[in-house]
Length: 430
Ligand SMILES: *Cc1c(COP(=O)(O)O)cnc(C)c1O
Image 1 (spheres, rainbow, N blue to C red):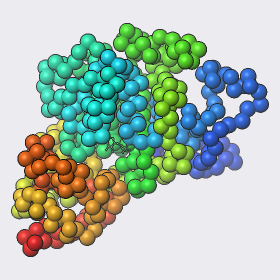
Image 2: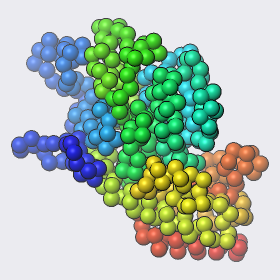
Image 3: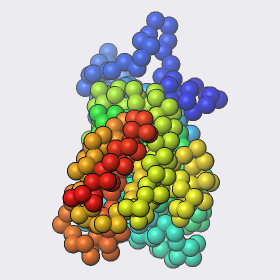
């Protein structure tokens, strides 16, 4: 489906049934597929013909949903993974080998930071982290001759910083490497990183794309604009024959639009097997059908809550790029003109005790380690995800003890604000 607006893609993209076929994407709950001759199947194994033979590699349900996400991002090819973690690992490991180096924004999701800084390091891959506010010179200085990829998040979880996608893309391309952007929080409804120069986009579909807290999942989309052959020496996995596939050279056989995802599926999914189940892909698609409608409501609620908090005397600071006072507001106006996301973080003047009293007082917002759900949820890192750290360590890590992250759901903003207001009242009563 081409030349339609993003909302129409959300509802109908990726799957067009033929005459008499199911209107809704069918769940192909089958691990395997049947062939008349072994020769037919051999063509699939040689990547000579496209088709299905085993769900670890490809499944029609997953392919319909991946095609929808690729269309939403304006990419040429896409694939689903079992989680956002798998998506980011695959996107990087598809082009980065032992002995290589990654440049990444320092304010990225904790799981991704750990993946790059600890686990991939054990695999012999090094990384340099740069602040999202870095100058062009600082960014340039982070590159090494063996740098193979640049990584950042459109809106970082949980720091809520906004990436200057054009700046990071310019630096990546000047060094002959692609920019990978995790677009989980913005979603393609609010920002399409490929249009700003990103080459590969990743998602934790667990968040807004699903949006109902039902299925962990991930996705990778290729923008199809990075010329692997022009930098052939840096990316031998794409530009030299793959002996595990009868000597196919991905960049030659599948071109700029198809090489990255074909290699990622036929090597990494084959060997690591982090496939999304067709059932989860079906749930994900139900979420995608209303993504454009829901994002607007999440953003309206986030903005209303952020504005309320910014005026409240018990609150010392609010982080939300939709506020004119936020350091990332100008970037948000450029990259996120229709809104950012529903996640707001704020700091209570009363520190740890105030945060604890506030959280106890909430009636509508639930305490959860989750974001981007239809139901509002809330977390105080100091008493949960970061509870091993002292108040001093927390402050140094930019997660002060009184910091609260609230993910505004789809409820009525009046009720969310009333709930927050009464919980703030309780701080002084405890
Ligand atoms: C949650 C999240 C991830 C990890 O995704 P999972 O689906 O939990 O594996 C990666 N990046 C961002 C920005 C996230 O918010």
